[in-house]
Length: 160
Image (tube, rainbow, N blue to C red; front, side, top):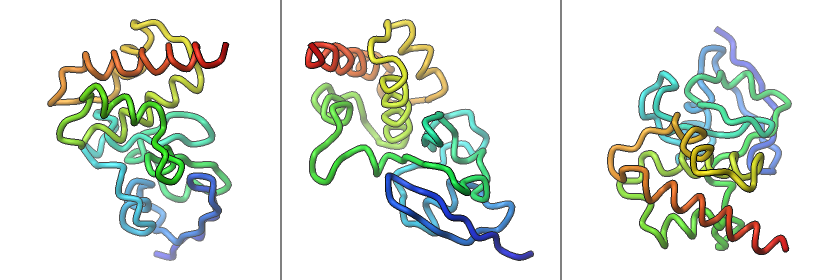
């Protein structure tokens, strides 16, 4: 089987790779590009640990083929921080202990950022609904929801 050449943008940088037609984007990110922040929790799109955004749309990278990245703009957890400067969500998750073992955290952060990019002033119900596709076995979700709500409130306040 011949490999497919893909040209894309990942975390704002041009990227090229070769992949098998059946290779997932998650495997390309982790195994070929060394971007190991996205985790494989289930391999079936049920846990959200591998969440990325593709052209601004939240996607489980375990369900996307690497070949589908052609011409797309992809954002991963590695693209959230700007150098040593953490994204406000990352800071708040640390501050509020909204993370524990770390398997789900990258996907939850990517999903939370995608929500706030789309809706900077969500209700608690909207946050809970948006993050329903991200499973966490350690935190119980309350700290995660509170952290996202606090960042949304801080962003709203700083926009004034």
